[in-house]
Amino acid sequence: MNERSSVAELAHSLRGELNRYSPGGKLPSSRALVERYRVSPVTVTRALAQLAAEGLVVTRPGAGAFRAERRTATAVVGDTSWQELALSADSATELVPRAVDASGVLVTLAAPPPGVIEFNGGYLHASLQPERALAAALARAGRRPGAWSRPPTDGLPELREWFAREIGGSVTAADLLITAGGQSAITTALRALTPPGTPVLVESPTYPGMLAVARAAGLRPVPVPADADGVRPELLEAAFRATGARVFVCQPLFQNPTGAVLAPERRREVVRIARAAGAFVVEDDFARRLVHEDAPPLPAPLAADDPDGVVVHVCSLTKATSPSLRVGALAARGPVLERLRAIQVVDSFFVPRPLQEAALELVGSPAWHRHLRAVAQELKSRRDLLTGAVAHQLPMLALPYVPYGGYHLWPRLPDTLPEAAFLAAALRAGVAAAPGRPYFCAEPPAGHIRLSFAGVAGPTEIVEGVRRLRTAVDELTP
Image (cartoon, rainbow, N blue to C red; front, side, top):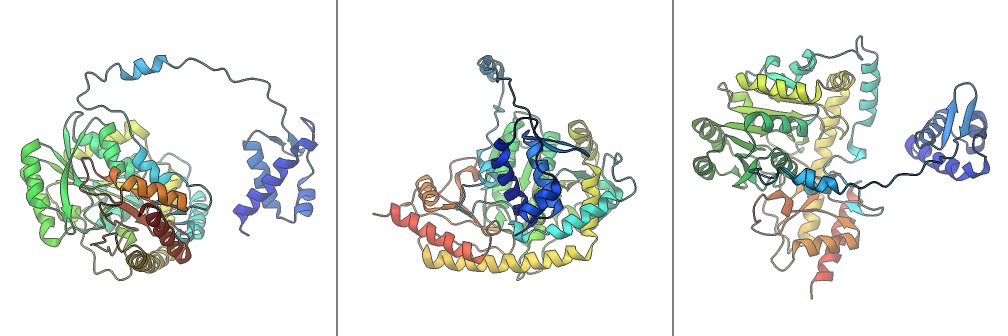
């Protein structure tokens, strides 16, 4: 049993015993708890800290732990109905309503009920995360001189240098800002590049989190169809011409949700078309470190070959490590960099220095490359297993493209299998998948689901999850 589960079990046991003690009564000593439950002193300390955080016990250094006094105050139920008018007062004058719909994002963040297999995850399963390397990096970072002092607003110079080398080309540390992950960087970029009420071009389908950011900023997402080779340049050019947009957001590598890679002949075309329209390309390079073991050499980021500053590049360490290592970077050239910097400083001042120091420790350690190799091998194995299981158990699902990077598949549903009904039946069968509808900013051409093979525990769950999806199909098939 690992330390985390031991702490949870001990906290549960102690919680059930609190009624034995009167308010203010002293609990057994830490030594007594160690002997009674046969756990380590660290486990006892952490379990008591958890109960203290819940307000159930009070710990006093040198005296021990005591049951907390009963709370006598009752919550006051207020009248918040006035907020309906306050929040909607300006909606009549807004060109684009800025109410935030986070449902498409929450699908990949919310934890399903116990026993449900998570094909809807957006991050690596805990078994794939470099937990030991992260813990060691965080411990070393905390001992660095100045680790808890204020960092430069642009980010630590050494970390900016590392991200610049990763992007390549002529990008330098002077072109970079350290951000609190990719989502924060995209939010900053869209706020900097285009005013509320204006259109922003997006791939169709595309990442729901980006659509939510755009709409929350008062922007109007306009879809540009993509295929297995990425966005279609002739349609991108037509969209710029028809809308007057000044921003195009894309994921040229392992696009979410299709997994497509922008074809070599289209890469220069996309930048050329945007430059001719006087527009920026926001390049979300979120999955570069989730390449599969059998992948060919990867194309460089669009930003690496962009001397004119057309491309604003977004990248992050989060997807390849842990959802809590929210460290990323924004790269840009020209006057736009100052605007990006100003917005970030006003919004958040800077990314916490201990987190930046931990990121530096991680990527500079031998464990970093070992981790990337292990992830590449495991993702390839899981992709192949899921692809084979879908082909065997769910032949009615079309899977025209199998990616060589990223963490998910994007099957198309037949017209006879409604998306919402299928997902509901799947959940009843004990498996959660991400719906396809939130990935489209206009009417979708067909029903889809997104199946993540990175967020499950391993091969056994993949096979069982597909079997449960087949059960859902059978439930809906006459």
